[in-house]
Length: 251
Image (spheres, rainbow, N blue to C red):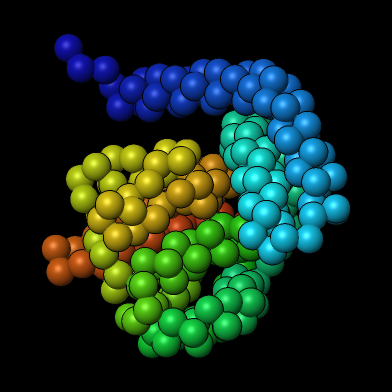
């Protein structure tokens, strides 16, 4: 006999929470063991770099230091994913945030020469931690820019929606880059999953976006037609939820 949908959903949430706790414990232990040797590598590389005059060796030492920092940052990303900071939401205007983030990527958009447009008219209220909302929009837009590889179209849309009598702020980011394979769809929001073999680098940005959106009680979905391209659609509460939603226990 199949489990009722509500019971199955609760079981899935519990499984996800256990996985996240296990990931956080791993990251904490790995961070302690890895950060010490990384700090030693960085320190020695910087000492050698200070007295080095040969351009090739300076470049090699700088690369060593940069890659060591990258290891440290990856552990930090895992920690933030498993145990993100509790949101401090407030009322925000969604179209204003979308335009602000788009302006930050103006150089990338001009360099890649895509056709870019924003379809968002009047104010659309969204109830979100302003910093975390900007992380989500930046991650999704960066994913689309990277997918275009030089040319294509990006369209950002925003509109008001309703789900189960709950007002939502909706937005989507569509691009004409490579689509998603079946494997990409299955692992799209998994940490460190990469779809670069298909021409789309998924990396860690989408998993962070998923984590933030779900922590706010929202949804994020991907659609990829056979003709190519991807549309990522986010549904986000437009008003404050019941008291106590944004707590450490929600992690």
